[in-house]
Length: 223
Ligand SMILES: [Fe+2]
Image (tube, rainbow, N blue to C red; front, top):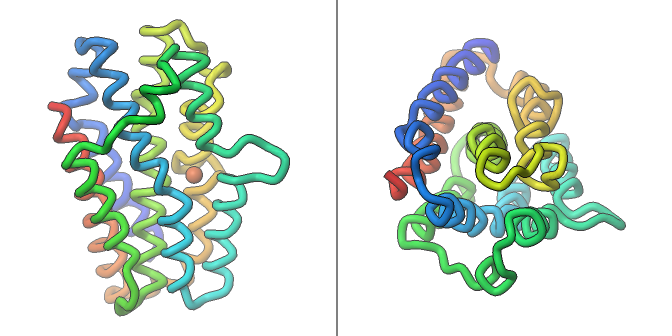
């Protein structure tokens, strides 16, 4: 059953990579590219609160612990947080001013995206663990990595930033992608235990589709 779900995810990933923004991106200006990064950053800024809220409703302890371990990566002891690393890439590597990086306002579409992402993890919902874990995996991990799949090469062509010199975009691309043995794959075990029949498979697919649609609508504002 999980294999069926995983195949369904792969279809969504393919569709995501066919979004017209990715084909247009190389032809757009650096100012446009930076605007995209800053709006994406408005979503990243909410990551910890979003995962925290999702975790509070989870029933299975193993599921809670999975989310905690991702949050611990995000805000590790004795290390810069992922948001610190994002600012490092923006300011030190790309050369955006601190003022611009920190004063950016989410666009109306970005605001709507954030609201909908929080709505995905609202409590209560039937089959909460399954719905919410699938939502986080798709909207918080898989499609984040797929986004940076397009961002990382652009950092090199536009600003001569080698992937290894990026502290945020490249590590997240490497770590969150499917089959990278990182965050996305850490959901495999629990999803295998939750997607066990046609009913739960249908719920997982519907949740994945919903999370996918919310993220896709975010990119529509740039085409
Ligand atoms: Fe992640």
